[in-house]
Image (cartoon, rainbow over all chains, first blue to last red; front, side, top):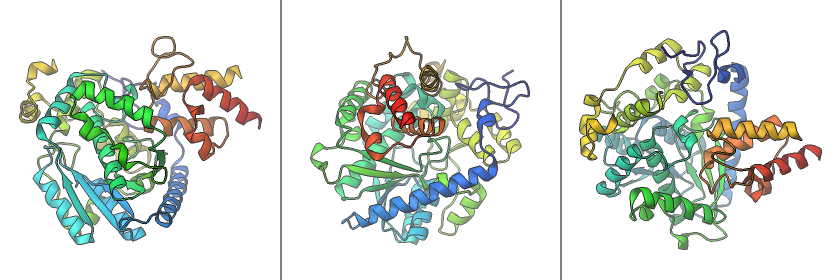
Length: 341
Length: 82
């Protein structure tokens, strides 16, 4: 039986995890105290405030910030937070991956309408998305190795596509600020504010694009590439915000708040997602391939920060996902049970 | 200096799930060889700043100094002695 950290929920099968004689993992041993986590969050919140101020003062766009908006609970809360706390004029962009819950799209429309936010729904070709998911499940060489500690392979492909699309939307609208609803564990806990120089990364971008084309076909250029004519020396630095890393809100508090704006919990998105129907397929495959749940670091961070009850987390993690639970989505992208053996 | 290099090497191996000699060499570009992505970059900067009590400037963060184990080690050595 796999040993699990007695303080958080990380199993010894997770890459880089070792348990001491008391059964405590190396992450918990190195973790700051709760009051230090709180101080660190406050410092990151100040960084976000400064980044917002700087971006607003240097922008001549109609919009202050493009938000990667999935319609799920965390990006809905991010949208609410940026609007209410900073009064930003936001452009919410949802990428319909072909497997979004209808309820998630309804939620996106309701929230953006209630908060007075412009909203774009962009749906890449379903044939491309299905192939992208199929290849992501079959191959191990599309993303950096460490990405398996943050998300499943299909999620990592989707996240990279969304990030590229957000940069493209930002450049087209002359916006230099992008926000997402990622949590600790999904991204490093220090990644509340990230500055990237799009112009300087040209060589790197081309190399990554070659990889995506090789894995997903030539059409990948359309979704993973950034049109070079959009980039110039004046707009090449983009700031990316992950405000959820600075907010101490439990899942219950998040849902209570966004429900005020008409958000309703989905019933068809499995155990972990609040917007995507194909998420559980990625989790099942990840579990089989690597021996741990791709959400486990996010859950462990939540337990350490006092946002998630450990016993509840263990119960949730103990629920297994069988092929019959994800058969419909697997078949929709052309895979059968034998592809996961 | 040897101790600093060992710490950096161990961090790269443990965080990015790679092994020196198998997956990379001292002069391998960590980004171009798909070992580190933008989130990994944040982890790397955070580690260097906290482990060696240094602060990297915006210019240093955007420079080529953070691309290989060799150049990172040289930069840390310089920053620590400043």
